[in-house]
Image (cartoon, rainbow, N blue to C red; front, side, top):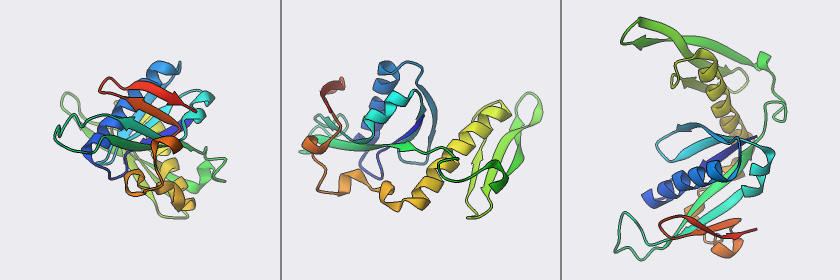
Length: 187
């Protein structure tokens, strides 16, 4: 199962919360790994067991700002959502063009390990050159493409958590407290 953790375009503290949440989930759920981080905001993809779906929703971190100690804000929100598989999105591999991208390598010149995936119907393009292995880059690129396709099909999933007043610790799936990110409440 693939889950997407994002701080939207929230303040830096929300980005810290997203990273701390990823660490907490990797420690809590066995066989959970960080697949990739992307975009300028803290946007992370975790791959793990089906139990990760229980974390989907808004997660709150109540803590004095570690970056701006004089700030009056003490609640930081991140959004967690389950990313559907390509089959659930009614897509198959024939709907994509996969092109190998040459990546410069300091020791060996140029390696063909990068991947660019294009969704034929929408024209969405995702490239990945993060890893040294082509199959790993392809896996990451398709995971990123799943996020983009899900956001295009369900624009309501792309909410910016910190901007909406309806988010509160009472409505959060989980609430973490303190600088050490201790789980206080779990739904």
